[in-house]
Image (cartoon, rainbow, N blue to C red; front, side, top):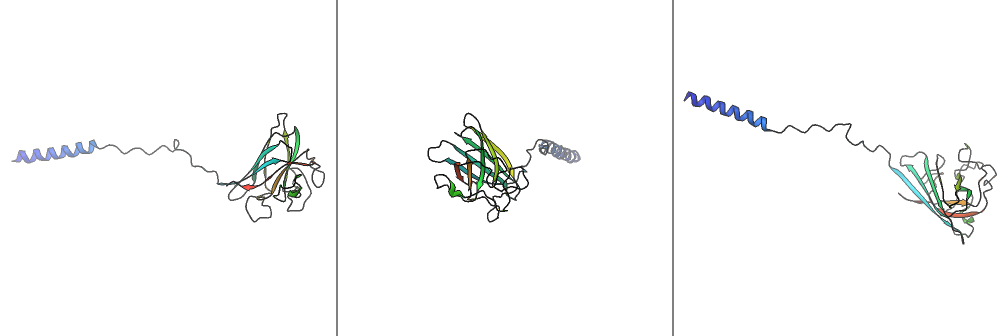
Length: 195
């Protein structure tokens, strides 16, 4: 009987060891270096103006505006197709109205601070002064810049939603008042939310 009890203890002990040994080890924690990094970019607010030519014109384009949702500088990216080669002034205008044949219904440059016209790098300039876009011989051009004088947030004095973007027939000299002597208006688009 004593041998039977000892045998039973050995069998139970061995079963316990085998049972423990038979369990799969827990999966190791993922290596932090191999885990994908969290997206730290802030959410963006976006707007777009689709430029259309005046009567008989061929130019078109798209100007996008992106701003972090908590505020900060606005990134402006313009792309032009079918435009006349050379430098052309590009501005945000006061009124989002492209109905006039010559686009004068868009008013003057957006200038809530009431300061002189200037270039996009000048400390003192209209909020709508985006400078010049260079259009190549193939009719294509692009421009990218950032501005801290405009916002996509509604209800602010520097808000650009609902205003117009104008492409001019000539270069902005970045100094003549009040418009940079950029000439007539050859394309217009109203800035609308894209978010």
